[in-house]
Amino acid sequence: MKFRHGAGPWGFPLVDGANQSGSVLLTKDWDFVPTRGDPMQIVGVNKVNPNGLSFPDTGLPCTFLVTGVDLRRVWGSCGSFALSIYPALIPLGHYMNVSNLPANGAAILMPDVSA
Image (cartoon, rainbow, N blue to C red; front, side):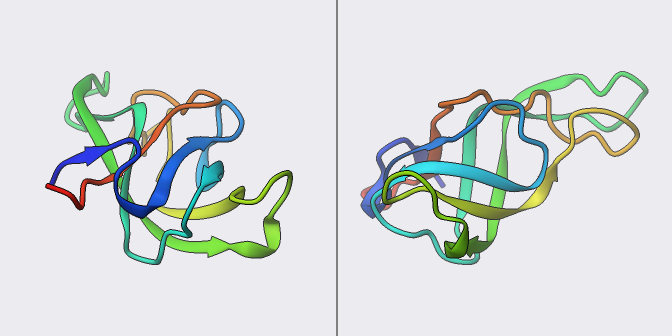
């Protein structure tokens, strides 16, 4: 499956706020609400290799699943809301699964439905 920014009906969604960790991600600039089960990637957030003590960056993007959309947590302009995601963003410790936390304004990549 290919992912790209601006794919399909979703528009050009972005992360809204730097260094977010855990299973809720604040986002903005959506044209269409993603649904439960939609896969997504965040530019600059890669998988890590869990084998060994250093958890090296694999260079491969981490794919997350949307597990919920909290439309009650809308702020600012239309198209800004909180996404529940799986797996959670864990940048440190024994359960580390991502190389970096997302930057403010990082592009959210959605499946390329045109391919």
